[in-house]
Amino acid sequence: MTRFRIPLMLGNVVELGGIFFALYLTYIAPDVPVVLLRFFLYLISWGCLVFFPHGLAHFVVGRLVGVRFHYYFLGRSAITKLKLPILPAVASRLPVLTLIVDRASLQLVKRGGRAVMFFSGAAASMIFPFFVAVASFGRLPLSLSYILVVLSAGNVIFDLYYSPKAGDISRAK
Image (cartoon, rainbow, N blue to C red; front, side, top):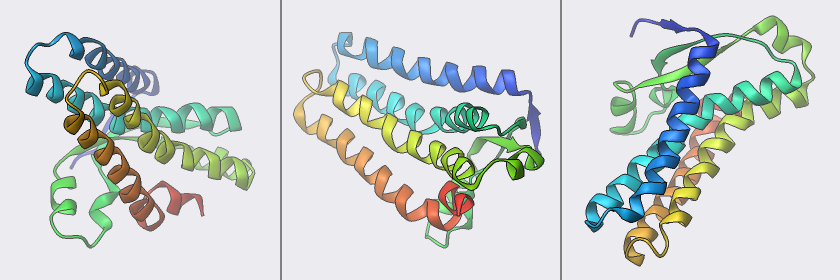
């Protein structure tokens, strides 16, 4: 996959746009009369909140601790490094928005600051999807809300497995 550079401001706008789109879907979903369509809107919102807050969390926390960034680019997920059946093959085909760190500024930041910057993306991707699951209670049949909770918990379990091996937590070490 060719690296397509995206200026920082535009990348941050895309990240914010994805977050606001997810929140909008969560807001309008209760008014959708068809239950499966309502669940589908919550599911799309859930996916957006796994993906979009990640890079933005790195950017915001990184800037707070003194890390600078060059640009975003569309690339492949580091999930492709894992030796799991099916998932790396699927992940290698999906583009992800990746933030490129200025290595010189990263070296000037204390180890704790670097760790917090790297952990922030993983934490955002693990925490934000629970918002959708909680918002769905009372607006979906309980079984469908529980599916969103199980997906959110599964996302946390997967991230806690994956991230120390090939993701952000491995970079923080």
